[in-house]
Amino acid sequence: MALGQGMGPKAVELVETGAQRGLWNCHLLPKWLKTLEKLLERLARPHKDFRLWLTTEPCEAFPLGVLQRSLKVVTEPPNGLKLNLRQSYGKISDELLDDCPHPAFRSLVYVLGFFHAVVQERRKYGKLGWNVPYDFSETDFRISMALISTYLTKAALAQEQQQQQQQALLRQQEAAAVPWGTLRYLIGEAMYGGRVSDSFDRRVLTTYLEEYMGDFLFDACQPFHFYAPRDGAPGGAIDVPQPGPRDAYLRAIEALPLVQSPEVFGLHANADISYYTAAAKALWAGLVDLQPRAGGGAGGGGGGGGAGGARSREELVAGVARDIHGRLPAPFDVPLIRKAIGVPSPTQVVLLQELERWNALSAAMASSLHDLQRALSGEVGFSGPLEELSAALANGKLPPAWGRLAPPTQKPLGPWMAWFARRHEQYAAWVEGGEPKVMWLAGLHAPETYLAALVQAACRDKGWPLDRSRLYTQVTRLTDAGQVEERPRHGCYVSGLYLEGAAWDHDAGQLTRQAPKQLVQELPLLQIIPAEAARLRLANTFRAPVYVTQSRRNAMGGGLVFEADLATGEHPSHWVLQGVALVLNIDR
Image (cartoon, rainbow, N blue to C red; front, side):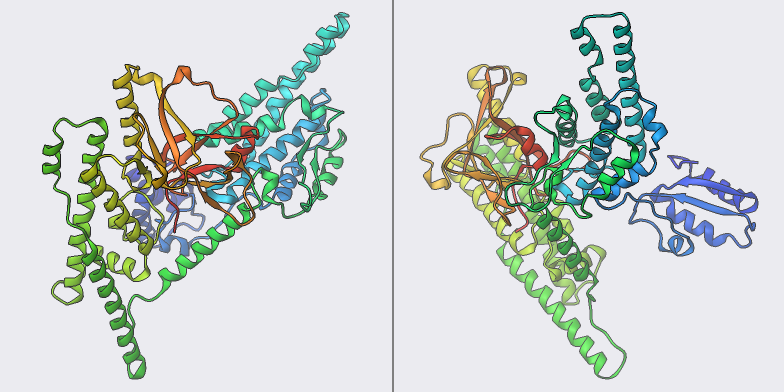
């Protein structure tokens, strides 16, 4: 059975019955796991043939007691492009390849296998690869292969019928043509695309299919390459083998190197650095969390050393708490500011909302730090939230309770406090001197509401319909807010955007490839201009998503702010596969 809402009692009944008679299957519901653990502990003398088969995805809520009692079986795709292709072809026979009479079928099966391996291997590179990690399976590959076989068989039969009827050569060629558009749509939108929930991930998926499937596969004058190394780059080109038996494709697969460069997947070579950096950070964060929270020992010098360690940790936390508490600014008097504004404009409404959120965060920080200092001095006991706050301050991390009231960020505590102070400076300048000439968008709690207010204000002034207006962006040559003489009448200048996956050529004013080891680059000031969508005619432009943090967008769609128009001399598909995006703040 599959566990859904209200199925808990039924599952208990089945376990108890199965303990006496047989076997059952369950896909777990995390909140029911504790009930399952208690139920297993109560089973005194189960039937000798009783087996409990549980299927689950990796889950932090899985009880340790159930895991210790279990024999665990893990299935996961092979690691590496070569091993992925080898696994796909390991289940394909010559008879299966002979089922389709079309001469292009064998080549397209290899292309599909390469595509299947690439979309799985792209997960390795985290958010540069996919915003949401997807479990593309062998079923997706086999159904897509069946679709290709069906459509190519129809094309081959149509060609044969027309040859028998002695139709014109042109019509023969049209009938024999591969329905590329249909295949790309069914594979990219239905088969593989059915798992994809993020629109920008779907753009990556369809770009791969446009790059891999087309008449160019069989162009004798300009051979197709999945990957061709740039000048001086190691490795050789990866091609589609000539049509032949299954063994010919297996030999081509075995000739591939075991480890591939990220450039094979369309990413920059720097993606490897991002991958290893993320792995090192995760390892270090785990080591920090494993450190003892208080010293202790039994007798002798060990006990004295433990007590000294505990005192030093408490002193460290107390010092950090006092320092942060002393830096907290006074809250903004929102009612007084609202009274001074009178009838607010759309952007002033955003300001008032931002100040209310700021005051809530500041009050929560002051209250929790005050309670923590009292707990450290022994006036009150430590609660769960105070333990969490103390551990975060000791480890130099942003306390989760503060993070829930602040804009999303990946910064550790030290850089976050500097960011916190800069946010207050921008709010104070906005209250005292009006809307800034250059808006530091990362300092806003909800930057998308500010951008929506800009569009609304422009539509009111110019009489545009709101639902037919959008934001157009242009990267300026200005690099500092002091270079801006006055604020534009409509729209704004934005600072503090970071480009990931590409670099910016200041001289040419367009995107360019990253330099080695340069993972992010700060963009010059970006001008945001409200415009009527029907009047925009953009060419040589890449629509880059702008995210709040380098975590980009999550499975629920949170994290996207807007889309920026960036000039490019390359085809936009190049930057799509490179994973190019802008972020408002980075983790330092």
